[in-house]
Image (cartoon, rainbow, N blue to C red; front, side, top):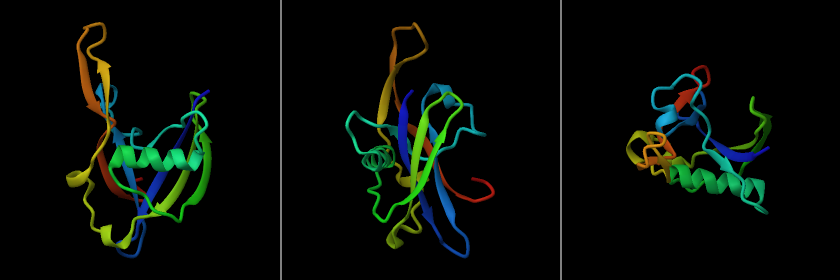
Length: 137
């Protein structure tokens, strides 16, 4: 069973909170939207601190250096058995108007695509990101 860790970034531009979610990149999620959006997260390296992994993964997937304080949200067990630990943090005030559609900087991964084609393509770990009100998130 694998274990991942991630961060949920929040902001409060007006009277209610907004939640930052990302859409996975690559061909498997290209035409999937509903139910595919998630927090930036990834696998924990051997011997790595779980919160440290969440912070590292967040920066790798978004280009944003997350800042404390972090609020422990606990963990969930996904249908496939994977455990996902999460923490929340507030977007610093100077970035409250940050537009992820303009400034997102995601790591990439390589995948043979189409399958068995011997063609290796590069895809972003996340291809879209956005701010969502609670009801939409």
